[in-house]
Length: 190
Ligand SMILES: [Cu+2]
Ligand SMILES: [Zn+2]
Image (cartoon, rainbow, N blue to C red):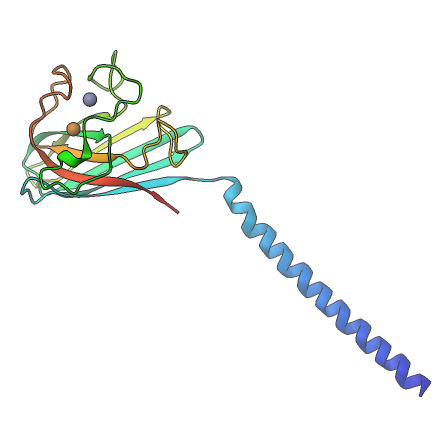
């Protein structure tokens, strides 16, 4: 009787130890998984669709590293030459001509211009050079934007607009770039 009780005790102890080790292993795994978001790489994306009857498509991808955000805009099925690309105030592409996206995104309330030179809107990305194949790409790296903070300089919720013509970087309020042929809403990736 005594012996079987001791034996039962040892078995129980062994079982408890096994459970303890299992819990410890699972906890370590969870701690490792939870450690990944400590070095966040926030990203936001706009899928650019056609506007004003164009065949244009494209993407805009914003990736944050520290205080720096890198943007890559790629478009397809555009006419060769220069096409202005801007961030407009609202990520609303419901109007067929893209006007629902509003004017240039301009949270600092300054004049339209050329990125990096004097005054320019935070949405003044510039001109994409489109090849004979109808494709083009522009990249921009900045610490003037944020992703997903809800602040005035947060790109999420704004709209990317591609224009039929080039931005002259001078005409107010939007560079005389012509019709809006592409539109995409900037959304946060989770
Ligand atoms: Cu524009
Ligand atoms: Zn502008």
